[in-house]
Length: 290
Image 1 (cartoon, one colour):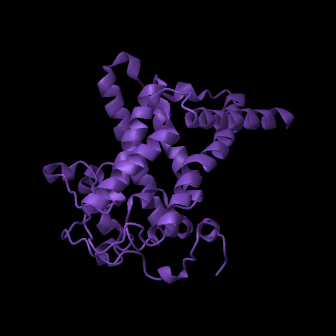
Image 2 (spheres, helix red, strand yellow):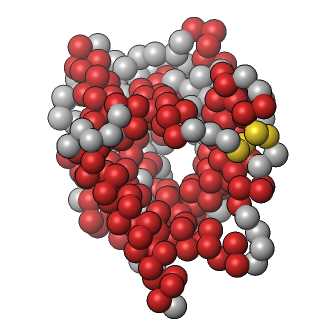
């Protein structure tokens, strides 16, 4: 038991130290998660202020600071804790003779670097899209995902407004995507991570963008607003537009729905008045019995 605790502790402390070095600029710019997140957030927020889609929406919109708390918790604090859990899980697989690195079916060192990054990005996004559908269709998962859909005014910080249980549900499939393509250098993985953060921030931002013909490939604010709309088509009772960074999965599997570019849709979900206000209450939501 002590060995397992030490594995958990060492991994947790290691990630904590990584973020501490981020804070004091002791890591390279390409691996600085903290300041990278801050810079992307400020850029997208600045675009919201300069080019607002919903002009009546305040700069400090409803629950703006609550969403910032969600961002800090989900992006930093919970990721520190969960790293220890995955270190223990990896050790457990190893004790059964299963080496996770041996699960790789593609070694990017054998193909051009740009192609490896593209495959990695596509695979991670597909698993994210699939998990997102599970969050909507499986009732126990939907209870937690309601936190994300309880936002009533969209803005960049709503990207990280989600229940901590979503980390538990998303991480395994994302980890599987990483394992299926082996041989990545950290700088490459970080590049993909920052790209995903930028796209996610933009998708939730108060900015009118659909990228023209690229909307059939890239998720965008217009498309994603309809994902958050309270009024959804009857033939898609569990939702539409589940794409994370890419929209192509929704178009391929017939879950895309963009009837207009109206930025004043009522967003939320039926019965969202049940959602409490405040970060702590929302992070505890989902465990309460009705």
